[in-house]
Image (cartoon, rainbow, N blue to C red):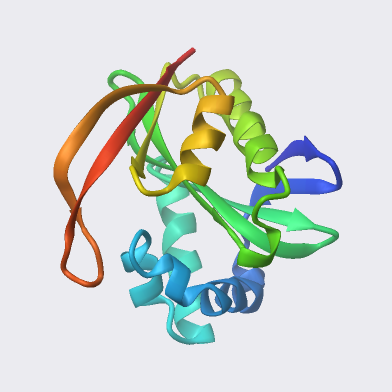
Length: 176
């Protein structure tokens, strides 16, 4: 399953055989991701764990619970975006994403988010998408707002960082 993004960037469902690239992406960005993707970082400490992690995500996709997409530039995995926390009764879903530190600030994630929104609304028939973003993550907030997400609220002491510090999380929503 592929969704186009343009600008020589492709988005496609991650595959089991990409576990080495996935591990390399996580490992190269481990410190940056530890606070906001603690489960992924904690479960992907080796290439074999990366393979098992991808296998589990793909099983969840078969159950329509989770959709894990890789972000590629010229066949190289440079980021990740997931459709998660899906509630089919509404239907709504959360998007979570990250990109390799060397690719930040190039406008890639904004285009990826735009393509993923289109996919969610048209193909998955999601009615509402939401993001939970640290108020300190100004780059992610800009990407969200550029793609039409509106701040719906500030959840106080909602998330615990790796350091143990509790932070507020800003909740952004986008309706179809």
